[in-house]
Image (cartoon, rainbow, N blue to C red; front, side, top):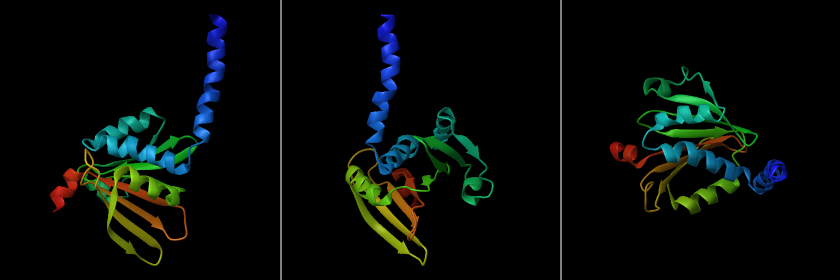
Length: 170
């Protein structure tokens, strides 16, 4: 029995590593958006304890007027060797930002899994903002996903605004 336990401890990390090697940056980014933003849409205040429990660090958000005015917070969250900035504004939206979100692969995955419909697109000299309405029936229907990224760069953010907030704005 002892040998089985030792073998299990040695082999498990190899099994998990094999599974994670097949994942793309886009998949990791989707998991962060899902785990922090979508799953906490009813209470973004859950994001703080969750971020800290996975080794995240609180980031001073005093310079961001929206976070400051709406009692939001920001966290630097590690996930499979990458770092994501996860922030939220109470009664508003949750955002995930990173240096390389792999938007070329991320957009089709988001569109497929949430059945997104583009409702607004804005381009400036350096930045693109794409707004999508979630069409998939269920919990997230009517919510907004907003992709904001610099032209010709890999940096960007994904914001999630729950349907309850969207409906208040109408």
